[in-house]
Image (cartoon, rainbow, N blue to C red):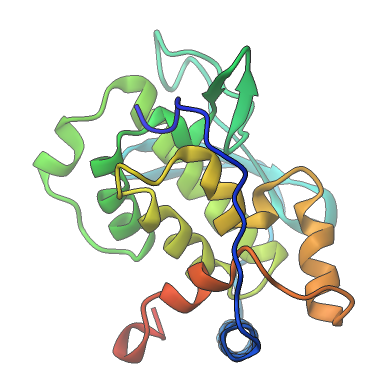
Length: 213
């Protein structure tokens, strides 16, 4: 599974031009998402299906859905607290490390609404299906909290398909996934903080004809 090797402190240096490009893309994504009506807030408890299995959502703070799964839906699997990455006794655990590198490509395809093949699913264990379904639910919840975020998070997940890209780097690629990450995003949008670690991920996101997806 990805990301159980400790990684060195990650420092990314970006130019003002790269940062401005990322800020413009982020703004464009948000404007397009809002114009389309954006992701919908959860008004009551509901269960949604994904190619990997179901997840549950209920209203959370600010209207953004709170995402869960349970053992009835995934018998014999380990419980998850929904964290992207967490470190325990020198090992990285959580939803991102649960998946192997090659399994992030089907996940990104599913988030884009593309149909998956039987081969895309067959290689996943029950625990990995649970993690992938949770990631789909959380990604959609992030889009409620931050219009346009789905493009950013897909790019961050796609980078995990590189076996050399360790799981902890996801939190640099998508800082909103850190504890307190929503505050980071609010400060970026208000201009009180300059985006840095996520700039490359934003600029690597699919563009041109895929911008609208």
